[in-house]
Image (cartoon, rainbow, N blue to C red; front, side, top):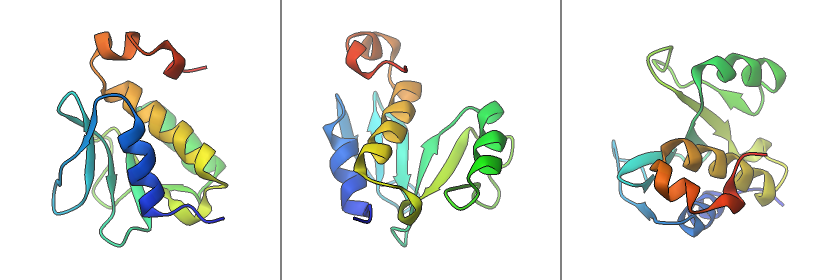
Length: 118
C-alpha cells in the first residue's frame, strides 16, 4: 500500500509534543518550535532533518527514495524522501522518528527512550 501525505501527517502528529504549522506555504511538523518534517506542495515527498555527513550515503544507496531539493546543499541539514518509494508506514515512521529526535529538545527526547535510535 502506498504511503501518502495523510500518513505523514498521522505519523508526525503521533510523535510527542508534535504540531502542524505551515512554513513556506507547505505543511510543516514541529517539536519544541523546530521543524522536523515538511511536506512538499505536491504531497509527493517529505523533507526531514538529516545530518549532512549521512545524506550522500543515503542518496547513493537509494537515489529513487532520497534526494536533495534544489538549493539545499551543504548549508542545510535536510533530505527529501519520495513517498511512493517507501515500503510502508513503518519505514516512514522510522524516518520521521529519526528526524524528530534530531529536532526535539534534549530533555523531551530523553523522556521518550522508546524512540531512541537503535
